[in-house]
Image (cartoon, rainbow, N blue to C red; front, side, top):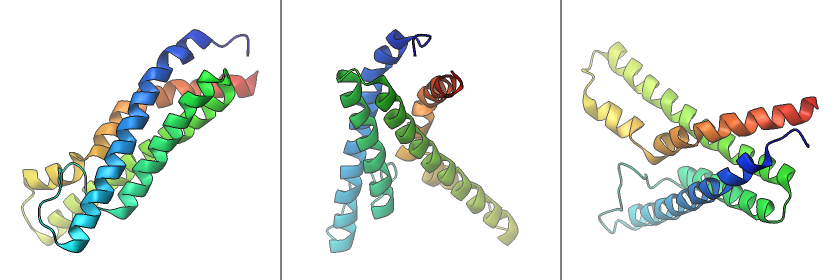
Length: 155
């Protein structure tokens, strides 16, 4: 544990907290959009960016809770729990990113097989979503935290 650069880990913790809060806000907006869609009340909040899907909301709320909880552990000087919590949240976020990329690829392949034209709307509806954007943003932190945990396990 003495070989780890704890200053880098502590320096990343505010960014992890901000990402966690953003994920929580996205999850709450997604639940609101889901309720609006269920009640047929009309216009949703940012429907292309934040879908009104309960599964999407559960994933983003779980990622947000995990990332926010990791900040609690860093304030308690528990570096290991911070690393584990932040890494789990980041892996969940990247998992959501990969699933959405596979959905976009399946949509494009379906359009090719059926003979439909592939236009910009396929890309904008599938890849310009908050789970894809936030997954790309959290990717560097995931790589760093995973490498730190790997070093800890080997030591």
